[in-house]
Length: 537
Image 1 (cartoon, rainbow, N blue to C red):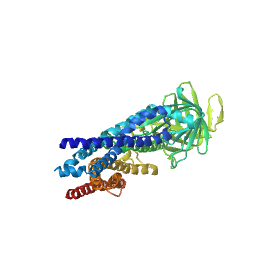
Image 2 (image 1 turned 135 degrees about the horizontal axis):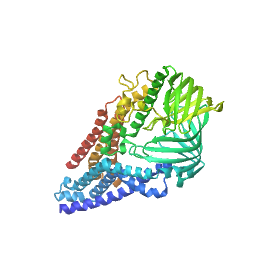
Image 3 (image 1 turned 90 degrees about the vertical axis):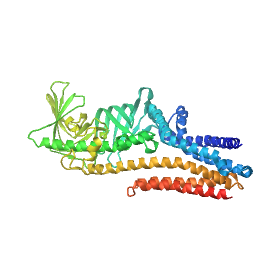
Image 4 (image 1 turned 60 degrees about the horizontal axis):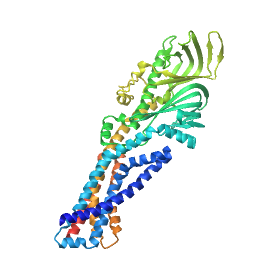
C-alpha cells in the first residue's frame, strides 16, 4: 500500500516538475541567446545549435525552482483534498509521505551539482567552440550588416566599405586602435585579409593590410604592407563561473591559463622588455662611435642605430623616445650595396601589437629625417617608418615565456632582470599582479562554495516547499509556492553577499564563504522548525 502511495505521489510530482522545467528552461535559454544576437550577430542556423548548448546552463537554475513549484503544488493539493489526513488516519506517518518529495530533492541536488561543476561549463565551452568555428563568419557578417565590428575585449575596431567572406577580404578598411587612457591611432588600407586563430585560453586576430597609411595623434605616414595582430579573450567562457572543477584547479596551479591574468602578465612583460632594451641601447651609446644592431624578422635588412639618449615614454605603453642626434643606417641584404642613411632629431621605438605576441617585434619612427644614398641626390622625408624588426635575442632571453609570471612579479625588486630605475608604468603593473592573483584565487574559492551551497540548499528548499504546501492547504495552491520562494530568495541573498565579500580585499575570503554556508544553515533550521510544527498538528 505504501509503495503504491509513493508511486502515485511521485508520478504527480514528476509530471508537474517536468512541465515546469521545460517551460522555464526554454524561457531562460532564449533570454541567454538575445545578447549573442546583439553582440556577435550569429546567423539563424546557429540558433538551434546554441539553444542546445545553453539548456544545461538554464537547467542549473531551473531545476530547484521547478522542483519547488511541483512539491508545493502537489503536496498542497494532496493536503487540500484531505488525502493527507486519510493517510495519517490510516497510520502512515508524515515522514513516510514526504519520501517521494525527498527523493526528488536529492535528485535535484545531485543533478544541480553535476550540472554546475561539470556539464554546464562543458556545454559553455562547446558553444564557445561553435562560435569560434564561425568567428570569421561573425566578423564578416557584422561588417556586412553594420559596416563595423569591434573585437571583443580589444581596443581594435574595424570599418570596411565591402566584405568578401569567401576570400576573407575586407576592402576600403579602417582599423582604429583606442587603448584606454592612451593616445590612439588608426590605419587605412585599400584592402586587408583577416584571419582568426583559436587557442585554448585566448583567440588571436591577424590583419594583413595592403598599401596602408598610419595616422597617429599628431602625424601620419605611409607604412606600406603591414600586419596587425591582437589577442582577445574567449567570447563566452572567459569567466571563473563558466569553468569546470578541473579547469578551476588548473587555473589555481597556473594563473596563465586564465586570460585576464595572461593579458596583465603580457603587458608587464612588454613594458619590462622595452625598458631592458632602453638600458641596453644607452649602455651601447656610451661607447665611442658605437651603433646598436637590429634586423628585420625575415633577415632581409639590418639597421645600425645611433641616438643621443633613449628614454621610456611616460605617456605611451611599451614605447621609447629617441633623442637627437639620431642616425639610422639601413642595409638591404637582398640588394648589393643598397645602404640608406637617415638622420633626425626626433623619433620613437615601440613594440608591435602592444607586445601581446610571444615573439616580440619592434617598430621605429623617425620624424622629418634627412636621407642620403650612394649615387642619389640627398633628400628629406616626412617620416621614416620601420616595422617587423626582431627584438634582440639576448634581451628576449631575459623575459622568456617559461616562468614569465615570476619574472615580471620580481620586476620591481632587487631580483629583477632590469638593473637600474623602473618607470612608473612598470611599477604600477607590478603592484597590480599580486592583487589580481589574489582576486582570482578568491573568485575560485567563492565559486566552488557557492555551487556547493546552492546544490545542497536545494534539498532544504524543496522540503520547505512541501511543508508550506501542506501548511497552506486551505488557501490558493500558488500561495504555498510564493511563500516557499521567500526562503529560496534569502539563500540566494546569502550566496551573493558571500561572493561580494570575497571580492572585497579588506575582508578575508573565509568570511564570504562563511556567509554562504550560514545561509544554508538558516534555511535548514527553518525547515526543521516548520516540520516540527507540522508533526505536532
